[in-house]
View (cartoon, one colour):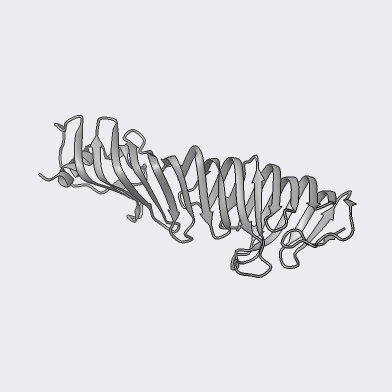
Length: 293
């Protein structure tokens, strides 16, 4: 009996440990009451299906060590199917037989198939019942809007909804890349930061600072919400609230709320605005255009 056939028999004996209640696992019908408590096999493949008989996920690897409680996999290549597909890879992985959860370790990469968004980290837990991936390690997310880094994350496997927990840093574009008016804005915050690619929305929380790369101009606030244009990926609108302060060289502006409109590139102050203005300063670009009161 070759290794792959033997693996199918092993999985059959424990199929409930790697499948959700509404899924089935692809195996051959056989009895394996005498299966050993530990076995190493070359070439690992496990498939899961939803109630409609459609393939929902798979986990593949070059080698698997099967014990009573876990399946340890080398060179993990997993796929999440359906309307929002994703690919997960890692050097090592462990499947918990009791609940079917997967732990990925070393060079972990998640790629959203439809958008190309990619997240990298050192370790990741994939809870398939909750449709959730989490990590406490540093993360990096590369997206058409820019690059986000931080510490700790929870997200759906396709990365369309994600939260970066702490020490957030994002580089975003105010216009489409290549546009002469495009400015790179670096946004930092204590976190958390949430993003929803379905609605093209992101929100930064606690000690938010946005800095325009070309001029060094700064925008400070407690909370910054951003909406992006679905087609161009540029910033459509941004709303800053809580202790808002805009710094443009020697000029400083204060307000309860500031609104940036991407089409007009104007920054409007609302609620007890105060401006400390020095004439002769250079006009900003991007989110740092002329202020409207």
